[in-house]
Image (cartoon, rainbow, N blue to C red; front, top):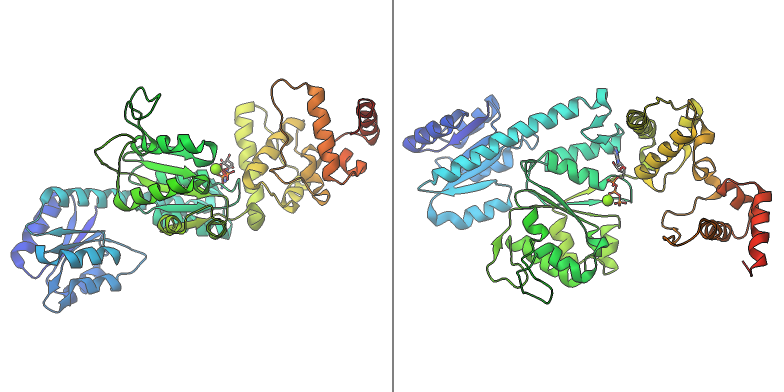
Length: 452
Ligand SMILES: Nc1ncnc2c1ncn2[C@@H]1O[C@H](COP(=O)(O)OP(=O)(O)OP(=O)(O)O)[C@@H](O)[C@H]1O
Ligand SMILES: [Mg+2]
């Protein structure tokens, strides 16, 4: 049962509050002074403290600084109308909420409902963390290395709150998976999780995607469109690649974050926003600000809480665990069970994984396809087997499109690989997985039709 500590020097208020809180399914402890309250805190750490502003032996607020940060109960200040200014100030100091007298019971009940739910979440998170050693994972996130444990610790603290979170980390480190986990471990878990990739939208479309628009607000707007702010109501909005959002829109987003209201394009009535924001970037946020890709003021607003995911090369002890997990998942969908050979494990631990977990997952999948029984080193892609010949960086993609022939694609790949290795045919052949002779033959063929 959740537990509440009620601190008020007025006995009548104290007992009527206690009764009400008990009716909501809480056990209660009562205190009439700061000293009393400290004793009660020792006796049983509460999930929520209802705190009177003025007490005979000091200010109620001074308790805030004495709380054990690891238990972090919700603290609700109860104040007379006159001291709303103080209460607002107190919110900045970590207070959860405040209520003015005479009390609005509906609001108190809503606050207590949140506290009870948060307690349930905290218990669930506690269970996830204590099963880490046996399961090797924290929910969907696989890994037991020290850097990942630090991430789980941060997720555990921030998930149940409404704080905006900025997730930074190289491509493929699991930012989207972390965003999902934050949602699943929040009070909003039954609401929607909406993801918007700001990098994948044209600058003109993105505003309408965020804010939505009213019918007739521009040519072609033939009906009202709900933007992602509205789609994510009572849930979580994941703004992926937030640095790719045009600057003028970053200003508008900041305004929405600060005021908690937005207006559909072409609309008049501002709508209240009940959305938790999680943003992600694979750039280093400070550099993105320096390069003029991310507005400084938006950055400070987003990074109320910042999570920086470690690259896979900094948690190499997780590689085997991840590879095993992926292998099991593949075996489940493909049927045949296959294992990693000890030599393959060694190979995977030695590689630097520039594409992080995503690259590992893909490498395991392709090795699974190549392997007849065990996954041995030679089943893995060439860049994993020959890291010394410098795998091309992941963004060294080639433009391939429908309409090209296989021969075209092959030619492009061969020419690009050769140029990457400064014309070294031996290295190019090795990475392409063909014999030197085949490579020579192809090049001769191409030269017939012009210079390569
Ligand atoms: N800790 C992890 N445990 C299990 N799977 C993971 C983990 N981290 C990442 N993955 C998997 O790796 C892939 C890439 O993860 P995700 O899409 O979350 O990365 P990202 O950081 O968002 O990458 P990008 O910056 O390229 O968008 C996904 O298939 C995801 O499920
Ligand atoms: Mg992503």
